[in-house]
Image (cartoon, rainbow, N blue to C red; front, side):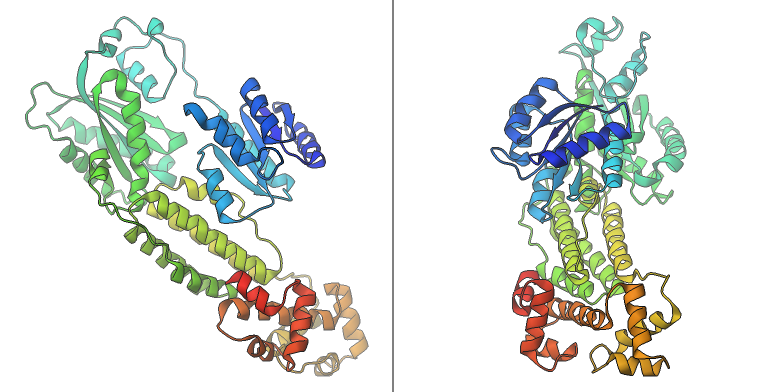
Length: 509
């Protein structure tokens, strides 16, 4: 795999190059560029398999470089984005290119970069086509597989079907199975074949597996002079034959093939409209169905986002899961364009991670969540990604080292219950029948900080939650977390966070 790296920080660029060489000898860094302008020329000249690029760079940034690569109908190579910026707009712009396979936040971990490289290698692998002379069915499968072909290499038996005036009145469909593809593809194809054998209006059927897209592609031709042939009824009937299999992500999309040489174009059209299942209860449709839908603006459910952020700040994972499901349902019922639903999901994840990071005091990077959201095809897939995000946030909140001693674990529970009262080291030690000096040494040894620092951190962490997830004023928050003097609370809060309570509240609400 040939790679070009576009990164303005020389040390980071050098580290990435060294790491890539360690991962695999099959990875070849063919270009190193300090900004998007240099990267643009290098990529156009070398035509690499993969780009690894920063966003913020002098002269030309990474987004501008990708936009210029796409100008003129072209498409950038597979791309891994590196960025110190986690806001929604950067992620959305990057994902619009369709070839961005990963969005990694700096500092990038070795494991994250390795997994991104492996994913890029898998996506760059092209399908193999043998060299034997294909018959008509094999040629159909090659076209469905988006194989490269030219007229000089088309077998004589196939050329009449590719003539400009050769009408075939055929249809192609995508049968999407999602995560259940591997275990269900065989039985689905058997059921489809059985159903099509009973259709007198169909004279030819070709099916091809596309595991990389979790789908089965179908090409069929109608019997000449078949007056009873109604394609929408046929596809709906086939979809009905599959519903009893209880496949969560099943979607059937189809398109007309007026000429055989237009098969690939029609097939890609059927695949492209699949995401419309995000805004339609119907799971079997074509382009004409989509074009009849009303056009109306989509209003992002900001109030629902507020409820979700409140649940995050209160560490209420059950409520967070419920609210996330409601958010998805509301978006899907009110949006017309599926991209609005996907953008809303990315924006919501960005908001949840932002609030969770503020409460924890450390950033929770999106990892591959934004990329996965950009690829969702069905309502079930969208819900699964958001639920995994909720689980990840819950796990971050619940993490407690198991190596603490019994005494320290008891202390942590008491502090959790009484942090808002006038708890002292002496009183805590007395309740545990040990000396304050011994308890102080245990805190320093096991937690790495003093009792006073730990209590202060606990109070400020809870204050962050209240500032984000409640309508309390600063002095009310101070009282809730154990500070009777609001001015002193503000001073401590600024020392630990770099902002006043009021500034923090405005920034995160």
